[in-house]
Length: 225
Image 1 (cartoon, rainbow, N blue to C red):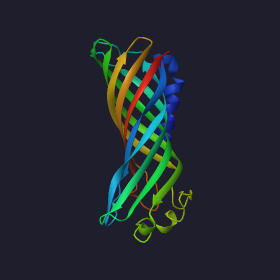
Image 2: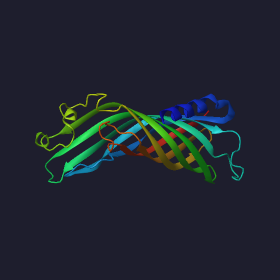
Image 3: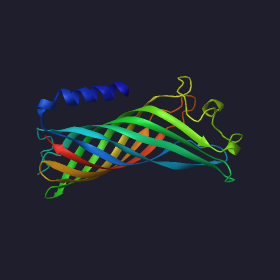
Image 4: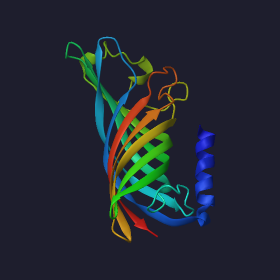
């Protein structure tokens, strides 16, 4: 999947002269993440985090959807985001809790369809893939949880998670699907979007079930160049 994402990114930017308009702008938002993993006698809870970064895209010049009467709705977009993720686990007795916090640099690569509903107001649909790089991580727990923590011992010796290629994966690959609303003000647009990321790779390579599921809600401004 890494190869396909790289090829798609190269094609988008190498072919910019075939597109009609470039757009770029900042994004900021909220992230809600959890793992696809269950531990005996522990209940998993989603972690509330944040995301921010930059979006960059190009609209297709040639009309690829002749049946659609308004502007060409097809664009390609690549985002560069910094995102906090994590996972919380609570023992069923309520006395033993621990929390994993991680930070990722995320690059979504998407096809975006924008359909005009009323003048200058659009409904967007986004789909594609993403790659993410785990930059830092740490975990917190009370002393009483040490004996009950289901995580392997090498995860729990320090407050911060030290990267070790025998256990952790820095790189993550996955699929995304989302949508949103956009209002075009001429030289720029304001937008709100909701996106779901499904990791296809595990955060820890000794356990295939530790895959991130992330819901992203963001606001942004896109300037039309």
